[in-house]
Figure 1 (cartoon, one colour):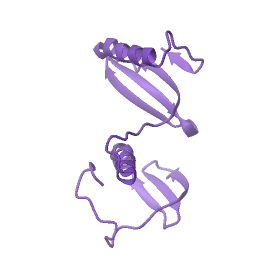
Figure 2 (figure 1 turned 30 degrees about the vertical axis):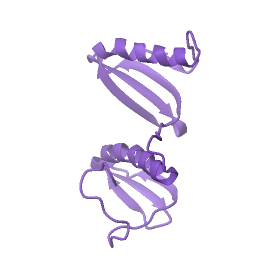
Figure 3 (figure 1 turned 120 degrees about the vertical axis):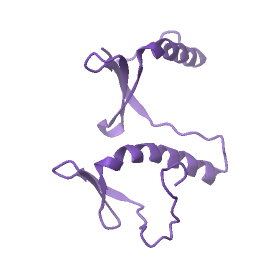
Figure 4 (figure 1 turned 90 degrees about the vertical axis):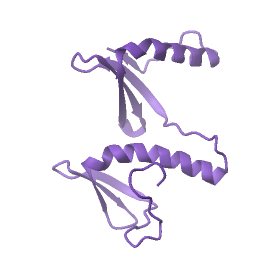
Length: 142
């Protein structure tokens, strides 16, 4: 997979199997593995690789869409149902958490001194969309 760490493997490698449907996912009782059930034998991913997988999947989706649609400018974005902004335990980092479909959450942290630049960028995007002062009932500020 382009952009992933390590050597990219061809789909025909003997160690690879084709998983083209997921019927269920669950964590083991000890939280060490994510079990993925589908049309192949259950795949077990150790928790140490989940962050790498989180980075690799959006990159793979975007790259696949670019190849399939022959459009190198195509981008990818996850749909967000809500968001929260706050600080964790008095840290100097600001945390922005996005709520995705299925109640999944994805959080990002950034230095507090970057907030004015983030506000400028969001203000520019809101103005470009024709909104003066965006408001939402699905917003939490801490």
